[in-house]
Image (cartoon, rainbow, N blue to C red; front, side, top):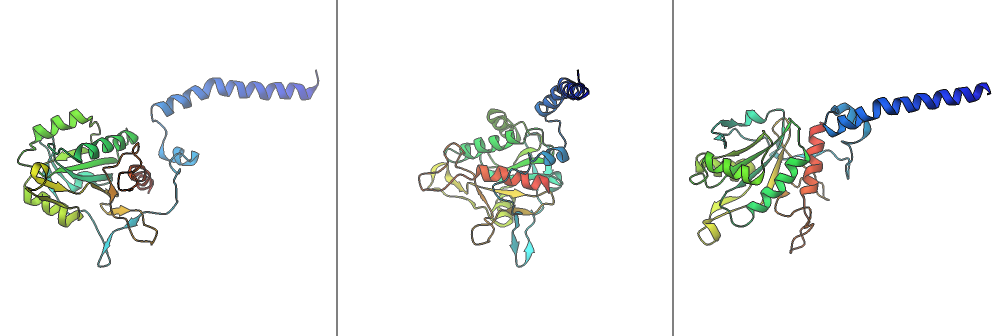
Length: 247
């Protein structure tokens, strides 16, 4: 046998040995979500974006909008403040457990978002009830269980009504209010806000370069579009969460 043939056989043997030893280990690491951020970025898994534009900051009078201070009680009876979300990317919503209309759809969509980032310690969700007199920690805990909340950084919070309404209407500019003419007597926006690791409200920009500010939370990925022609934005939200996690 010629010397070159021995070389080819040796190379083939090395490749085969590598496959037998290392490929199963790599597969197991992927299954167990045990690949570091730098490794994922090097393989492009965290950079599969529809566009490469950085997310905008929301600015008011030239100042970047930051989440205001808050302090509420979560579903486990623990006091949660904005400091509990430091170093985390998170989504904010306002809802109530007895909501017969948009809240179930919003929270099913948030469950999908939660599951897309399973095991990510630097991702969370903040849900504030607008009917705190009904939604006690016990009620919120039962609601979380029924919907499948598993992320330890997903806090469903209750507190003083005025504080919650101020946080929504002033702090986030997400409308909530009482209205006896609508079903259940309350109305609120179905939008989500996205917060970066430093507590700033972020979003992508529209075609005119202006921040979109919020993400539509009611339309599911499967629906794609509602009856008014509005497209779903859950896919957009998940992509933008991934961008902020990479910052």
